[in-house]
Length: 134
Image (cartoon, rainbow, N blue to C red):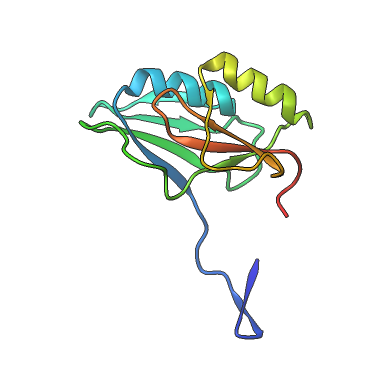
């Protein structure tokens, strides 16, 4: 993979290997995100949880680390994951995630976007894309 910088291509030196999320209730959040992503959960000795992609995941699939945090989330996330439906059914995926405990979130979107904004059980925003990233 390369990136273009100032008109020339340079080799990419990093990739995102893990998404780390500070959470208040590790067990609740591990159940939600494992269900959302189809990942398996491994509890850490320190009260954290690590979520691993399924065996058939593509090489380099990210892990998710949920670490316990004393305080609740405050304000809008400055970064968030964008999910795509593996089945190609964004509306169905939104409904599935709502059934797992997500809720719709309003971050000022107009309704014309190519994504639906949701929040996990602790209010962390994420999007379900209506198609491939553009």
